[in-house]
Length: 283
Length: 294
Image (cartoon, rainbow over all chains, first blue to last red; front, side, top):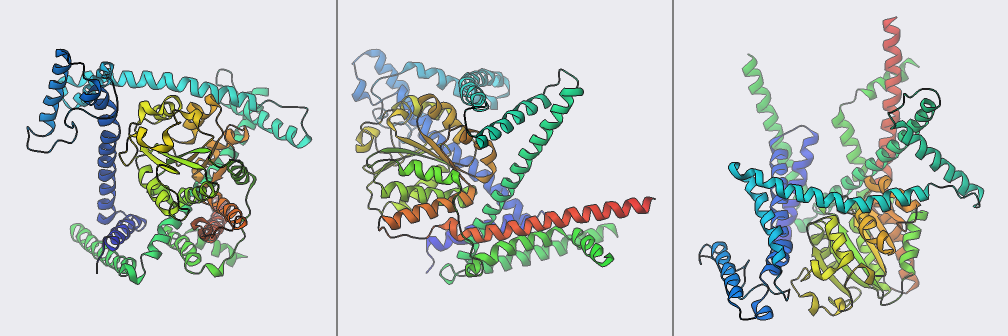
């Protein structure tokens, strides 16, 4: 009996081994898995972003359920007529079922927020990037994103990464000796590291010596980062190999050994054919 | 002596594929035969701080658990999620799952379904999964300011006002603790900068090994209460939680990270040996080439 669990296991094993096959050399199995990964990831992010953010938070604010906001005005009727136009477009003029724009508005909010037309229009501007003549409009949306992100990040960085870190690098001479020595090392490391990146003065004399100390601190940091990077990559390898081990069991119809042999044979044939073609072309 | 030098030069000229194979075997063998390599797991101070901070929480407290990882970093982070959930559930703490990564939805769903039934926890009463919202730091800022402005429904599509445990939760200040399961951007750094530092909410993290050196300055400074660093951090936390569960007479299922640590240690030894051999070979070759030139 082939269950969905067994099919999933075979897909997992096939894609894992396709990616691992790159360790031998670049080959069609690796390329296929890579393209599939990029395509599926992009598609998944696009769909989930639309249904988790755009539909409930943007359309939901512009057209909340009419029963919750109805004031009987003509303006509101016009507003919800626009909603129906969008619905007609999204359903292919009645060919598909309603999904993005449900009957009578979107449940969740209890007032119409017209201000949300601004992000709606900026979002459309962003898509207009695909139209060469109107592509320039995308700059407005990008300008908004850059400005908003810069403003948002400014406070966060200033508070958490600058002020709090400066505070932390101060030496408290009332502490015990161990703490004082640690704090002094951090202080010297911070100052010398900063001096290394100070290019307004030539790195000679005291500045040169301090920047040299800064290099040593930076090297220690890079070494630690490299060590942790190796540890992380090995952890991921362990995760994949552990899954391959689990899926080689009889309950998964020996997925790992069968697919492994299949890929090895295919790559061997592909390599052999490649070599032969190369020899023929050079001859 | 010449024979040893030749051996090192031979080792240095090994095909990279043979090295890949040896590293692969160093991982595979301890996984197939774990009884061959038994290494003790001793929690480091950073992991102990995380455990102590969570252990300090009281019954009924609210914890925001943020899932910022995907299948690519699952081996490192997922064991942490499971151990954290076991710890929180055993203390009857309410868990609020959020995701800053789209793949976080899968990870949170899997983690909740793996642990919740064992501890007889009910959805909407003991735990809730709010799911992913795109927007990175803007989402963190939104959760810090007003959750309802951002989330109208949970991951299952239930309206937020219909979820019993969301009744008194409006923003980050309604939580007693925040824990980020982080594999990159957006992640721990954004929680520090936009939510926990400005609102002064106790915050801790479990992250991938590659992030550790970037996060440690926050830990040293007390902006983050301890850190679970990669798979070793997960294994250490598992051992601490298992000991606590045994004390509470709760059945303990062995954690995944602990079972993988033997493979991790052996692979590290192999890589360190290759680095040493590589350097010795480099110096021997350089010296030899230098002599040839003379």
